[in-house]
Image (cartoon, rainbow, N blue to C red; front, side, top):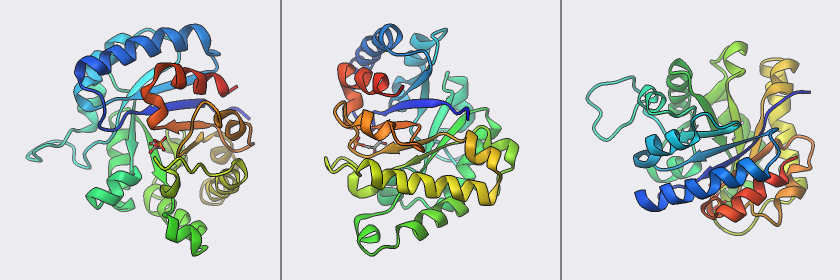
Amino acid sequence: MSRAKIVAGNWKMNKDYEEGLSLASEIIPMVESEASTGVHAILFPPFVHLHAIASLVKGKNHIYVGGQDCSMHTSGAYTGEVSASMLRSAGASHVLVGHSERRQYYGESSADGALKIAQALAAGLIPVYCVGETKDERLGGQYEEIIARQLQEGLSALSEAQMAHVVIAYEPVWAIGTGLTASPEQAQEVHAMIRGWLRNHFSAQVANHTSILYGGSVNAGNASALFAMEDIDGGLVGGASLKSRDFTDIVKANR
Ligand code: 13P
């Protein structure tokens, strides 16, 4: 089984330009010197910081930069939007798609996600497609169905060859920014379900090679127990990615 181990930091709408550059300048040498080279670290800063941070990671092994979102359109009169090819040209290698905050606050659907994933792949970016259920959906026992639908609507139009360039993140909405982490067992159950979905809809090869990250209140204290689970290939970290020590420790926890 060979799939990439990944720890990604989603900075969300935090850090002004100077602060963002200074955080990246701290994180990059720490991750380089302390973390195993087998783990990929990806920083997802706000768009404005992306090009400068991309210059800092250029030539570094296993450290990458990505956008937090991209447009579902290729180019044109879409004020405020940033295209996947613009991200690529600014030095990004990855892009988050379908984050629950985009779904919740901006009404994004999984069908929008499918269009963004297509844009990302066409531009040579690796989309990190986020799925996850709300608290009510979990309490109502519908989470498997909800996640299967998000996967179906977001990914089913892709070919097996395209799936080689897709990462999935499971982020239960009830665990994001709440301090309530899914237990390693709860997360593993969903990750195994996602891998099963990939096996049924694509192939065993796709299932075995797709990295599936867990996100939702990951911190330096709970990361190793989560990453030790068979189907959890890493983390998508929000709050704790804004501190260089914490983020580096989480990268180190993924062995
Ligand atoms: P927190 O780690 O702050 O819970 O955020 C998770 C997340 O949304 C990462 O994309």
